[in-house]
Image 1 (tube, rainbow, N blue to C red):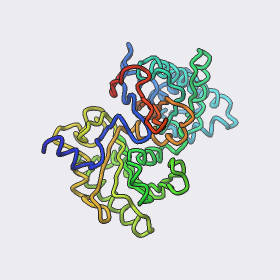
Image 2 (tube, rainbow, N blue to C red; image 1 turned 180 degrees about the horizontal axis):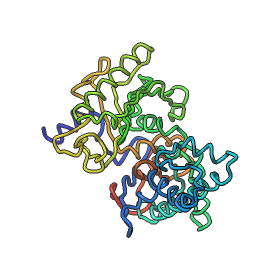
Image 3 (cartoon, one colour; image 1 turned 90 degrees about the vertical axis):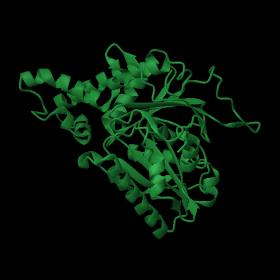
Image 4 (cartoon, rainbow, N blue to C red; image 1 turned 90 degrees about the horizontal axis):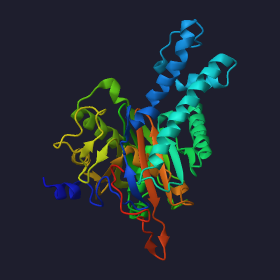
Length: 374
């Protein structure tokens, strides 16, 4: 199948990994910056925090004063660490605070490097998502990183993403869809694919309450922890198709006017035809193969939703998570997202507000940026 035919077949409305979306231009995403120690994102990942915590525990282990005993650092839950922050054990609390401070310094360093790239020039605000954000220790690290940057005269606001990280990647899929979809339908299907989990959701637009989609919410979702099952690539697609069909049935049962649209958030650099160029190494099987196309595979299993042909759009997971913030970023022009998880996802956006009936030119920073780097 020719590329142009594949694009038409799998979307019908736009191309995957698009640089221009209804509300924003994507100035960059999935930037991979290196320093002398390797990829920059590895310094501010979920694993990096655990390594920092372990370094602080090491001298205490030698004297038998480690408050966590022999429990491995990567097995201590965020809930446990959050409880220690407000608990009566001052030494344990101080230990966690020390790790938070070191991690905040790393996050500030990484953010500083992003802000110095051409693609991130003049960024006014950064939202931080990913699983690490869903904790008090994550919120403290984000706030501390902001203070560090402001002390260095960076005029930047940093804040945790508003939606729960598990739902931001689903709600953000609404902003992949063209606005005409919302006039006749009140919900869409969304998929958030990660290296450990695949989550599907029925997302209510609440468009009649707020046309900027600020009231959108996930009304039903299904989670599959595929890392536990270690499926083949084909097995993963089959399970995903079954999950989506279940949500279609649920939408019909609950009386939703489901749009014939599926928005997908997926790791990596997404090509216009729906193939994945790179960055999908943690997914089950080889998703970067030229012979594999997730949107096309799903379309075979779900050719129609209701009485209409299914339209599917896929984009980078960091981009889609960031898109959930679009309604709340209209007071500024340029903003970005960092997602702290297994790695560090990133994307930078410029809002496309109407001025005199025309889209604002998003190339004010200079020439159009390379979407995959700086």
